Length: 407
Image 1 (cartoon, rainbow, N blue to C red):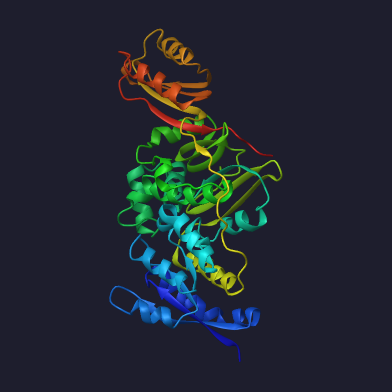
Image 2 (cartoon, helix red, strand yellow; image 1 turned 180 degrees about the vertical axis):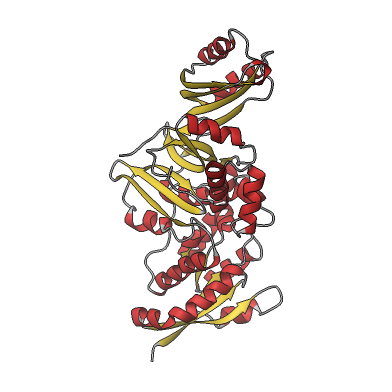
């Protein structure tokens, strides 16, 4: 008979319930691998269970409550009492990660969190173990399945943003309140965690600049097709001028980019380094069974624990102003010299035009272009000047374009 391994489960929502079912189904297989048979010995919800009793009767705590408190207090107390902890709480780690990792090191326990970023995509384990000795230069990630599904449907069917969001909610890919998904905040929390691990420097959620997809229109999708581009909500963490830039925003990708073909609710992360060139990991990014599978993988790892997350050794300066190519959408009156004036203003800020599409006549003309890489501050300065021209009929729209393609 295998020795029992007792698990205290904090939270019993979609993921918590799926985890308990999966654990019961796989307990025999895990016992054969580890020599210990895992079982849930206590569950804490708002109306059920006592944390102190659950902690006393457990060898490991799985935290699936979400939010900051009381999750933070429970996790810290569990580690102080010598318990390993597995969590899927991206908000907790992106705001209090350094405190939690320090507590894990102090008390000699594991804090595992694969399920906090990109669902079943094993990017955390790859960064901490497989690429531990690599000098990572850049990470690009599609780390929010809700927005990726919405943008995919808009591109494939011509649906409006609102209609695609309603469909995502009906299918369970979007919450009733999708704000943190569609405004980029969810992806920003995940990128803070990835950046901390990949670049060995503390990154707090408040240091991640982000914007969402609420302003994306069907016109943007149509012009993207004309220009050979696809649109994704991209999280980026990269070395810039000796510092670190971490950001989330919509971005156009050319077809050769490894993230360009990742559709629907899937997540994917691309890691670039001189040592490895580029690797891409993809898979389902959300869902109870999928997230539960990642949590269970962490439980098995904690049952045979390797070294804990080490203390950071670097403090890179965080960079906000980064060079990029940009898509620029203008609603203009079709008059002689319009394109020339726009190009002149861009040129004065150092921006050159790569490609242009013009449609419509009279007061309903649309001018869409992609400009070569330029610092965002200079592009934004040009846009402010362009917005003031008398033939510009609406606020210009700007979306970043990622140029990299990999064979």
